[in-house]
Length: 325
Image (spheres, rainbow, N blue to C red):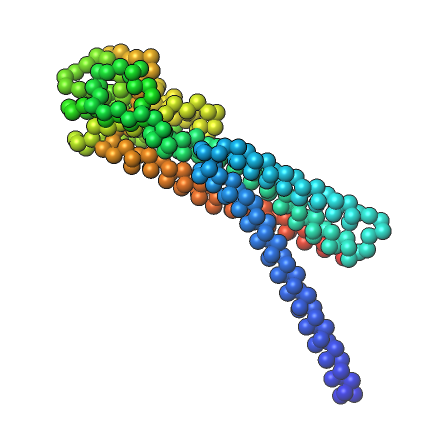
């Protein structure tokens, strides 16, 4: 009787150990699928936006090729998931094959859909980051630099400017500044020489750095030694600004017009707007680092979305497998 009891305990022990190992393998497999579902689309997004930030300005065709390839990969993954689903629904399929197909199908469908989502999001966000930050960071090097420019000079004669260094005595007339509230406060003030003027060709602008009227402190306006302007480019791209404020350039132009109207000043057809600074190169590098920051923060947000979706896929898959038992 004692030996029989001992044998039964040994059988039960081996059975429990086998179940424990199977459960451990299932848990490890589930964790691996979760990691893949969360990380693969995130890496796709991160890589595609990196192409916009670092390569698109020089080789735009490479960007569109990468977008096309990753969209194709996502579609192929979805197609493979559909094929596995049809295999599971076959009347001759074994029960073990049905369970495996359900797991595999759910995984490939999740990867495919998330890859398509990451690719589409990378297209929109990557192009927005490129137009808003990267283009401006290269703008100064790719356009002419003018020096000793009088504020009374014609803006049209400097339409190809990237950086303008004004003549000594030039400054921003902070008393004629205006802040246009359009979700953010868009600030503008005329650049003048000695004495008061009734016409302004050049304007200093910035965001969230002024009062409604009469005071502005954007960039280096408070620095008496500053007399350079980093020109704000006119980017008319549809994706240049996705914020509710609309296009930044247009908002600056509205602020300029409001200031001119309020203080009785006349404007040329296309006044030149600049970031007033003592170091134009720091403005250029600032735009580029803003672009990198937007890229990294959006990648973190994409990982959060993918991780949440991965949890949903694993939950649905587990229920589908349980229903097959």
